[in-house]
Length: 258
Ligand code: COA
Image: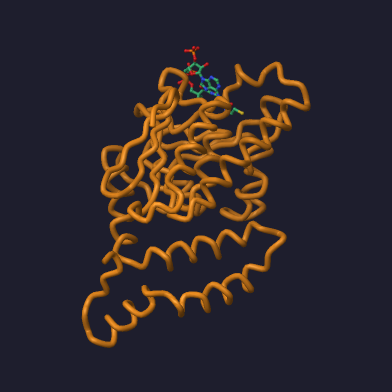
């Protein structure tokens, strides 16, 4: 697939999406976000893929936020539409059905931070910087941060970050639980692939159901515990369940990818 603002490739059974506007620190214009949604939705249900890695081009930025030049003259209606379509992109990542990992290779500010938060997992390079500077521009975060950040790091820290517009560096983000680990920049993608290689040995369908159940944390119309009980039960009719339990009982390694 050909895109203007992102590149995609498959490596080690993972779709790697690279935001490709390095001269603008990978600022997220509306078309760019639309391309991410198209790329993510295009692989939905593709059982050959173990996950999606999302990163930024260059060594300075994952994404330095929504494109300020693009929205500077928006009306309230255009602003709300921008937020709604951005939410659609974030939801596409969250609902992709395979693990999405943000490989945060530098600035993850504003919409960039929100994009990373919409991924299931975040791994940061040691130069990563996270922040929600929107209040300094007279707006609030519009791609889900007011809801996702408190769930990730707690209401108090999240509120402080968003009302001060301050930044946190990689190590502090680790302390907050905003990222799973911090690695040297040169090791960032390898670290994401290594994590996915572990997932690849497990049941694709069970992994998908874990993601679905965890997602109901955010879904106020659903009861996450109820989702878990239903999905747990549904596993019992799967070939993967037969393979996984048979492998254990016969003291052999499960092979889910036959
Ligand atoms: N939207 C549009 N353009 C952006 C951008 C954004 N969010 N972030 C960076 N850019 C552009 C700059 O305008 C500049 O373009 P130019 O070279 O054509 O002038 C280019 O990217 C490089 O940025 P620059 O500011 O020169 O880099 P820096 O290293 O001095 O500063 C930052 C880096 C991240 C601190 C700074 O770019 C910044 O504060 N960006 C905005 C962050 C923000 O508020 N994001 C939330 C938006 S809601």
